[in-house]
Image (cartoon, rainbow, N blue to C red):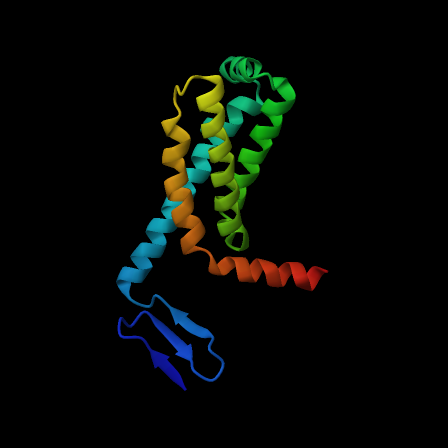
Length: 154
């Protein structure tokens, strides 16, 4: 017993309530492909443009973290978090959690930009929060998969 919604995008087993097929239409496939493309772009941005300068101690990153007062420990910590988030954006079970974590990191970056740099470049973290929130929301079903994996390991 399956039921297809009016939009034709999903089939659900009415007995168990589980989704059998999702986004079978070409529009759904294009939306998933576009979302994955956005995830790849963000992962590349966080890995190459954001984490790499911190991890190789580029002079601009060193100067910024010295201005904040966090030094090299803070710089390397943020760099590792950004790199981990970039990788996790590409792992299906971690996509939503990674987007939320990177969003929280960007919220912190916004506060630091306002307090330590007088708002210079404060819009950048806010702009990045928008696609991260979209990914977190669109991939939220993966949170249940992740929870099942964690419970199975415990």
